[in-house]
Amino acid sequence: MGESKKDEAPALHKQPSQEPGSDGITTTTTTTTTTTTTTAAEATDVPPAAQTGADASAVDPTTTGDQTPTAILSTSTAPAPTEPTKPKSAISRKPVPSTHLEVDKSRPQDFEGEVATDNELPPPEVLKKIEDYIVLDHDGKSHTFKSLYTGNNVSRRVLMIFIRHFFCGQCQDYVRSLSESISPDALLALPVSTFIVIIGCGDPALIEGYAKDTNCQFPIYTDPTRSIFDALGMKQTLALGAKPAYAKRPMSKSIISSIAQGLWALPSGLTLKGGNQRQVGGEFLFEPSDLVTPVSSPKDEKRMALGSPEDIQGGKTKGDCAEDEGSVEEKQVTWCHRMKTTRDHCEIPELMEILGVDGQGKPIEDEERWRMALLNRKGQGSSMARQMSELSRERGP
Image (cartoon, one colour):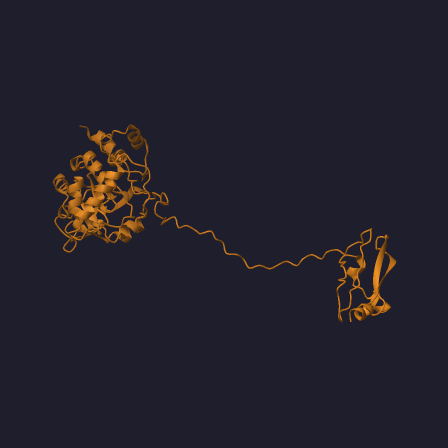
């Protein structure tokens, strides 16, 4: 059986042939033909790639059965010219979506850094929009926002200081420093009656304790909905920022104090009602457009120093207040500053400067921070302080 299969195996004969190449070089090619099964016609039917020797392959000598051995070509010593490679067709790909995420800088992530805000003065249309927004006093009584800076028995110049939540130790240090440096009597002694109002964003039941802890001599209100904060462009962040001069306590003591105040408020259910912890504030100075206009009587101005909401409203609340519209003096914001971090209030020396109060405040032990507080100015705008100074010189002692 093995011998019969060996006899039937086709004999292979190699015949050299010469073919002229396209570049004039004669290529010697050895063509293997099958004497038993491959005819002359089939031998000439060799693929072009095989004729040039580009895809030469060896014959498997173990091929058996009905499989026909493949004719192979050996590569010549002189390479044959290859056909030019066709350019690959462009592969169409779907656009890959960008992995870059746009960051909303108006509401940055916690501790990301300073918020993207500015100190542009709010335009009259914004003040008109929010003049009837409601704020609450320490008794929970409602007052219009406008009634805090204009109306009967209200000082002609009012500095609005917006603080953070009522448990913020940094803002408490700020209000303490403010009360140590600027008194209501010093403000009422100015040529143009001036006063300060503080606005938070927590529960009104916390106002009385806040005023006691900070020795605050000025009236405190709250905007629990933070609608006025938002309308005036104040942002939200938890970034600390650089330590200011008014922050006299170490950060650790400030945090411990805040926690203690929160625990103290547990029985009353006010621990979580101090206000939005991410909300930061700012300072806005409301002044009349014309300095030379009638002013309130000194007696009425003295009554406002008591800090009572009824005093500021002339003994009237919002419900029964019937002011003479002709006597109401229109006000505008002439200077402002918006906080960029949680401890970025305007320093006390700058406040005294824009209010026109003599002095620079109480110095601190850290000389470098105090020097920066005296040199740097955060706010933007122009107050009536210079005009008031000129008016004082004209009047004489």
